[in-house]
Structures are given as C-alpha cells and as structure tokens.
Image (cartoon, rainbow, N blue to C red; front, top):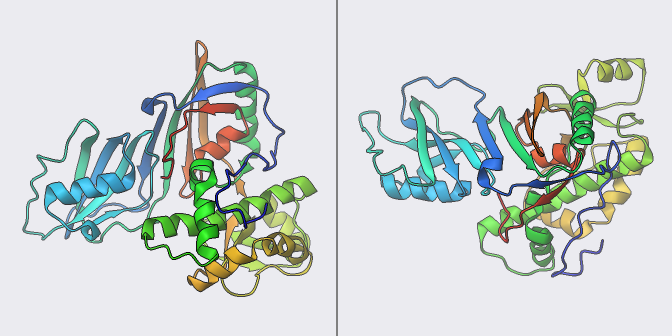
Length: 354
C-alpha cells in the first residue's frame, strides 16, 4: 500500500491467518465490562520508599486521563506520575500507577475515587514505575451473541496449543489507521508538535511493517520454519542472535529455548542475513520513508517474537455468550488471539488509541 496518500482509510484486514479465517461471528466490547484487564508487575513492592504505588481500577478512561486525574487531585506534576503500560479506554482495567512523594509525606487520597476511578490497593516502593516494567496482563473477555460457539471453542483450544501470530492489534494503528496517516505526513516533512501524536505515528509505522513481515511468512509457509540467516530471540530475554541453520537450531526451537522474530525497523543495518534478509528486505524497502523517519528519530533496529501462545486459557459458555480468560506477556494483544478464533463485531469509537 502506498504511503503517498495521507488521508486514506487503511484496510488492515489483509494480514494472513495462521489457522485459516474463522467462520463464526460475535459481538465484542459492547460494554466496558466485556473487556477486563488486570496488570501484573515483574517485581515485589518493598513497602517503603519515595513512590506510592496504586493499583487503580479505571472504567472508560485511557491511561493518560488517569495520570492527569492523579496529578491534579494529588497536587503533583504530570511527570511525577508513572505507569508501566497503556490500557484500552473501552474496558475495565486494573492498572498500576506510581506517584512520587516524600517518605514523610502522607498523600491525601480522598479525592482520587470517582465513578470511573477506584483505588484497589496501595503500597510504597523505592523506584518510580517506568514504561515497560510490566510482566503481563490477565484478560477476561465476554464475546456476545456468538454465532457458532462450538467452532469458537474448538479454535480457542487450537490457539491454546499452537498459538497465534504475535500481530500488533488494530488499536495500535488508530481509528481507520489514522496513526499511519500521521506517520506519512511527518515523513513528508509536515511539522508535528504534539508529542503524543508523534509517538503514536512512530509506533504505528514500526508495527505495520512488523505485521507485514509476519503475514508474509505465513503466506510463504515459513511461520514456524526457520531459514538461513533468521534472527532468534532467547526465551525470557530481549537478547537475540543471527544464525545459519543446523540441527541445534531445530532442537532449541522445539524446546522453546529460542523463538523466531521479525524486524522492528529503525536505524542501522538489517540484522537478518542470507535467505532471511532476502525475504525481509524487500518488504521493509516498500516503506523507505518510514524507515528514514524512524532512523532520524533515533529508533534502533530491534526484533520482536512472531509467535504468541496465551497461557492458562479457559472459556465458559453462557447462553449465546462465551467468556474467555487468558494471560499474555507484556506487549502482546488480546485482539490478536481473538482474531484467529472469531470475526468480532467491535463497537467502534473515534478515538481508539490506547
């Protein structure tokens, strides 16, 4: 798709399915309570220190709105409020926030609770909560008016066993892909001052190219099959390496010690080599203006695992609804799991950015 049309409505339905396109349909996010998310931190809170951590339950608010609310009510600067990740506005989410305060200062929390914000628990910690400091998320999702519960249940069993493509969800790209339009306008030389919009644009551009590479691997039949020069991510870390194939690679993939990856484009040379580079480079080359923009903004080449397996997945039928619960690591999208299982009719909101 050309990046020259700055005001297009992007069709993001072309990415390949790993298990074939589902036949059934269901309503998704008719109500905020249909999408419940709970964060888990990767560390234990110490109980002392200059940062008060608050587990906040928010309803129909995005993360930035809660940060602004906390800063205003507690008389703090916005930069004194920390969070680990962004959560959907159209949801009920339990999310951690930190607020910097002197160890001798007892914050007055009486004004925090509203109809849309509720403190679940608090505890002090020595360090501010930073973006990315997140172990994962637990999801509880109600799919309503399911047309074929048996098919959906069977597909959920399949993805619990075999996983799904680790696509970035549609919310990353904004309403009708408008974050990609911002990336085009910026790459074409338009001055954009809003830091929030610039962040959305950069993330969307990188995510789109990643999804393109993953989809092409599925189409070519090499989603789970390594090729010479592929880049492998070490399980449980952000470390990766490039390798020419041998028997040890197949063994380590089977044991899930390493995982296949696709590029998160940025400055510097492509990390993949040989056959993998021959496959990836032409896809990346279609988006030269984005690559230049990302490099100019200092984003380095990175890699992201292409395979995602939901953990502890369970589902329960309730009349024509199906309640699905599972856990995903930080950075993974629940909608990418659901996409392989059902065609969901999602309530559309003009501002769908996280």
